[in-house]
Every structure is written in C-alpha cells, then in structure tokens.
Length: 278
Image 1 (cartoon, rainbow, N blue to C red):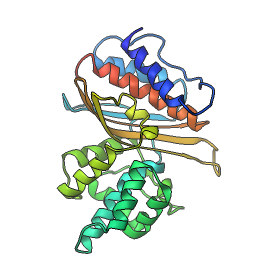
Image 2: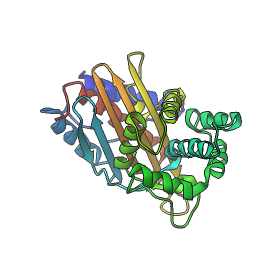
Image 3: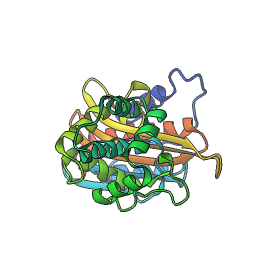
Image 4: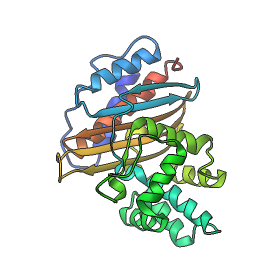
C-alpha cells in the first residue's frame, strides 16, 4: 500500500473510531498522485471535489514559502473555527482594560479552544465585544474576506474563507501589530492542546513525530439548506514537513464532512513528503 493510501485509510479509521457509525462513502483519489508537489495537490483536490462543489483549501508550505489554493476564496460560516478569533478578541479586550486576561476568562479560553466548549465561547464573545470587535480584529489582520453575518450576531455565523484562515494562522505564528507576542504564544499553546477527538482534518497526521496547532469547526444549517459546514485550520510540523493548511466544506452530514477533511489532510501530508511546494 502506498504511503498516501495508508495515511488516507488511517485518517478515515481514526475519524470513525468509537462513533458507532458505518463508514461514510467518500470519493478518494483512485491512484497515488504523481509529478511535482503542486501537480500532486491539484490531482488530489480534483478527485475530492467530486464529493461536493462546496469545498475550499488554502496551503502554505513554510519550507519553500509557496502557496497552493483550491477554491481558496470559498466562503462559508466559521462555526467553532471562530473560537481562535474569539480568544484573540478577549486578549485584546483585557489589554485595553490595562491588564491580563482574568483567571475566569483564561479558563473559558482554554475550554473554548481545547474542548470547543460553546458556553465558554459565548461568554468570551460577550466579554470581548461581540461582532463589532470581531470585525475590527479581522480588518486589522487583513482578513478581507472575513466578516460578521449581516443578519445574525452569533459567532458561529461569522463568514470566512480558507485563504483568510491560512492568513490568520500565519499572523499568529509570525507576527502582526494586531496581537502581542505573548498573546500569539498563548493562542499557539492552546491550539497545540486540542483534545484528541477534535484533531481530525488538519490534525490527521498528528503523531509523536508530527506536531499540530489547530482548530476545527462544524455546524448544521437547519434553517437554510440543512447541510453541515465542516472546517479545519492549523499548522503541521514534523517528518520533514512544515506547513499551514485551512480547509472548509459543506456536506450532508457531519460524519461525511469530517471524513472528507480527514482524508484530504492525510493526502496533503503525504504529498508534501515527496518534496517542497514550488
């Protein structure tokens, strides 16, 4: 079995382990991709696009500084992926008030990112200024395709794109006037501790030799198309790889979206093992 096929299979198994559900039928590449890394990624994404036209990906290979996008401007709701921004908003609020994040808020920040706790995110959203503060931070970060929902003030309904989430991760890692060094390190620390059940997608290759800093999000839109928005963003480093990846899709079930992003995450990791993105 090829390394690509092994990783994809392992990712799918991990996604389904313990959930008591039958495997989800996801169309995957029929053969290992060939050629330069960029060509391999294009082959991978062309194959996975057969599952849905609501799929976007943005990648930055930090070993070469080169980017790859597949519908990187695909726009959808953030869901719990917004919790990274929410914690950043809370850190900025505390600094504006002349101090550090209070212990209660630090606990909420940890729960929001590590365990994706919605009550904690709700509390921080209200504390930090809600949609106005969210939009201000997005603007300062240069996330031009990220914005509040015009009709709903709930954080899960904020809109973003894979390319903007790649930019956010890059800003957190490498610096931005919108966040202090201490705040960036704090965010990275929380993102490195995401609980195992939530490390699918970008986190598919995580192991003792591969580190991942990440946040996922998922929500069903029962009031509109009844589909699930399933998202994953983060930084992967290890076994010769060092890259930022953001993926977003919309699928009929959460399980299908989760497996789709898990399979893509494993295949991207495998492709980057063959060389740098040029």
